[in-house]
Length: 139
Image: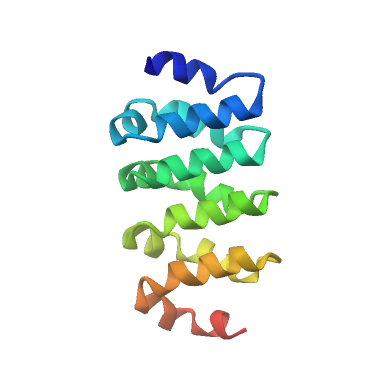
């Protein structure tokens, strides 16, 4: 029934689209098999659907690595939940924290506290990043 679920990710109702992404995210196999459909939802007009897509990708670090550039772009999304979900997805692996540290550090200046907190939590997973960006953290 996976193909039917993927079709529902394009439904006119945002709740159905979000539920379809959540359903695909229940297994690593589905995330890998239908990754393109999930990544496509990063461009959904509704923030909750974009968040669901990021949370799905976050469950499988190889997908985060494969789509890191798109995830980094979402760290500048207009929706604060999407910005936080993007940072959380990048924080799943040390490699992503190091590779995209500048984007994470930039979020220390986000106007929303939860986004700043997500950036701090990401950086603290890799102590060298904390040392490297101590000035930005102290500000």
